[in-house]
Image 1 (spheres, rainbow, N blue to C red):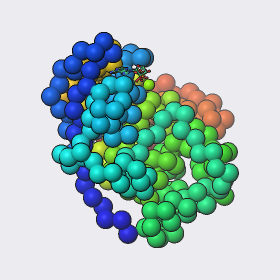
Image 2: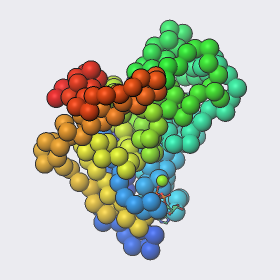
Image 3: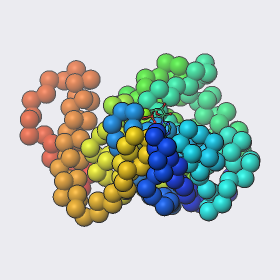
Image 4: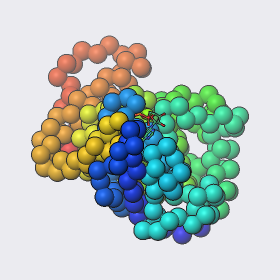
Length: 270
Ligand SMILES: Nc1ncnc2c1ncn2[C@@H]1O[C@H](COP(=O)(O)OP(=O)(O)O)[C@@H](O)[C@H]1O
Ligand SMILES: [Mg+2]
């Protein structure tokens, strides 16, 4: 069994694309923290989370450095994928190995050395809470849709990898129930960073990092100021999710006032 360690990640500033120093002292991320990264295309959002993923030490284009528990990370944490406390999932993340879902998860369970084969069924059940297109053990990894793949990899990172830090790069249009993903990540005390153009994800995170010209231009802590709008956006989101599922299953949709009902059905407090 892997010891479940807690990790604190510190991001030290680098330079913008023009070589100007970034205007922050340090950004510290604790277990259970939720952050989003916003900014126009090309502003450096992916570069920012890639720095975290590779545990940059002033050796990437941005010049940032990442500390783990306040110190330069030890070599094995950087090199050994089984020890890496970070999982990065992007729009284009695909598993190309020609394996069934059960076989893929079994291999990961073995690599992590955390035994319990019952984790296979639990992981698939969790993934199926995140996606409306049900995943079965016998499906082939290469046959999964983008949404199914991301749902499975998030569930896998939570339950099998027990990864303390998740980085999700623009997964919003990907057939994922974001509300359930967020509440699950909070329940398991994961730190998570979303690169996102999605207002709901941007609103629901505790901190919002604003990128401009390759640099962090600001870190917003909306606190109570945006709380009132979150409920509304969450209702819209749940409504759209429900609508998508109905249309997918061939139903005619007729209830334009269904947002509150959908919200209730999704188990979201109004
Ligand atoms: N601080 C920086 N210094 C130099 N190059 C950068 C910096 N930040 C980002 N880049 C480069 O700029 C390009 C666009 O950045 P990217 O992170 O892909 O933007 P986004 O994800 O916001 O669309 C990439 O080639 C990236 O390597
Ligand atoms: Mg990007």
